[in-house]
Amino acid sequence: MPLVGKVVFVEEADLAAIKAAADSRADEVEIIREAIHLAAVRVRRRKANGAMLGEQGAVREDDL
Image (spheres, rainbow, N blue to C red):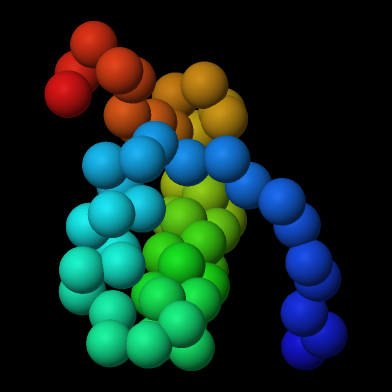
């Protein structure tokens, strides 16, 4: 499957946590790529079960 480049803005604290977990830039990118893949799988699974996008249990800031 071909990869696509995108610019994504993230919370500083979230990126700091990823950087702390990663030993090198390659590891950092792989962590982010895996997270995006898992999010896509979750969306596909919920959509297949009939959930509307707004009903998929997205995390809202006030939930944190």
